[in-house]
Length: 124
Image 1 (tube, rainbow, N blue to C red):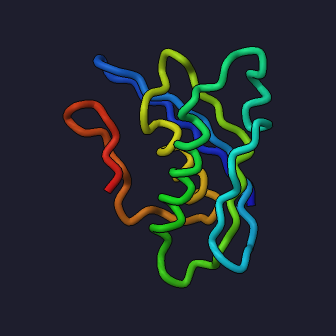
Image 2 (cartoon, rainbow, N blue to C red):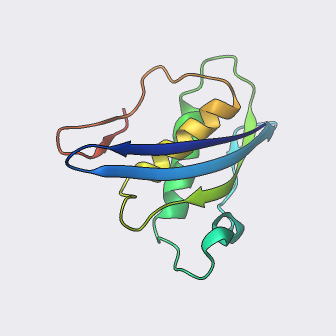
Image 3 (tube, one colour):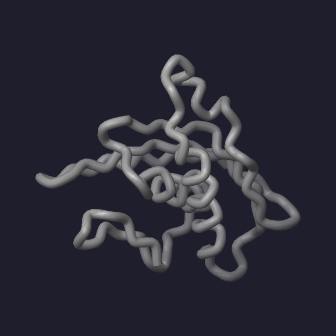
């Protein structure tokens, strides 16, 4: 199952942007594959944000750890990460990855992460 989630939000104070694609397949246990450099091939001529692979990895695990009981176990491969130097901040890629995983599995989170008063992501 493949899915993409694009976070694109703007307020008067701040913008949030990230787009993540995942491939989710059945597996004997939950697993998230390390993010391959190919996930960034669309911007090979520009540097990769150093936190992006870890945020995507963390976002996939965040989603898997919050799946409803009885959801089949899966392997997540993050196939594409798109961020923007001026509009992607801490937590944006994690959020987009979690939602891409949930979308691939056709699952809604029990509690969605939100932006707090300090304009930073809160992941319950």
